[in-house]
Image 1 (spheres, one colour):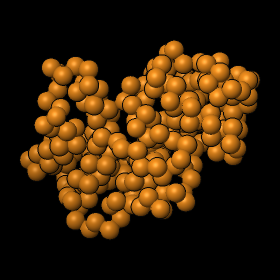
Image 2 (cartoon, one colour):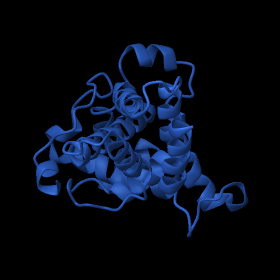
Image 3 (cartoon, rainbow, N blue to C red):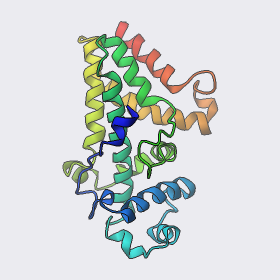
Image 4 (cartoon, rainbow, N blue to C red):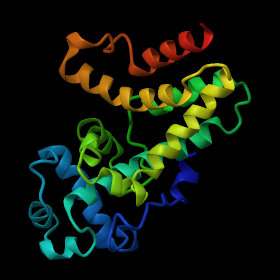
Length: 224
C-alpha cells in the first residue's frame, strides 16, 4: 500500500488555493513547514510571516499559494482526510464480510497515526495532531455554508458517506447510519483530545484505544 500511495496525488478542491502547492518545491516546503509550525505554535498563533521566516522566503510568496491562513488550514485538513480515504479504500478493497470491513474501516479512521513516509513533505503525525486540535476551526465560521457550497468539505463528507454505507451493509435496518458515521469521525478526534488533556472525561487511554471504543459502540448498536 505504501508503494501505491507514493504514486498517488490527493486531489483537493482548487478553490482552496490560488496556486497548487504540489506544483513546486516552494509550495511543498510551505506545506511541510506549515504543518510543523502550526503543530508547534497552534493555529491561533500561526502566521504567514512566521512561516516565511521559517522557510527563509518572503511572506508575499506564501500569499501566491493561499489567500489566508484559514484557506491553508482547510487545505491541510482536506489533505489529511483524503489520505485517510486512500488508506480506507486500499485496506478494505478485498474484504467481503460487511462486519469485518466496517471494523477495519473504523480502525483506520480512529487509530493513532504513525508517520509512513509515503509523502516526503508531509509529517502525518504532526498533521494528525493539527486535525485533532484545530479541525473544528475550519468550519466553525460564519462562512461555512458558502464554503460548503464551494466544495471545501467534500472529502470529509465523502469519507463519512463511505462509512455510512458500510454501516448500512452490516444492518440495513439501523435507522441512523449517517449520524453514526459522522459521530465516529468527529468523536474519534474528541476522544483523542480527551485522552491527552482531560483523562477523567474518557475511558480511552493506555488500556483502551479510541478504535476499540468505537468498534465496541458500533457493534452493540448494530447488533441490538
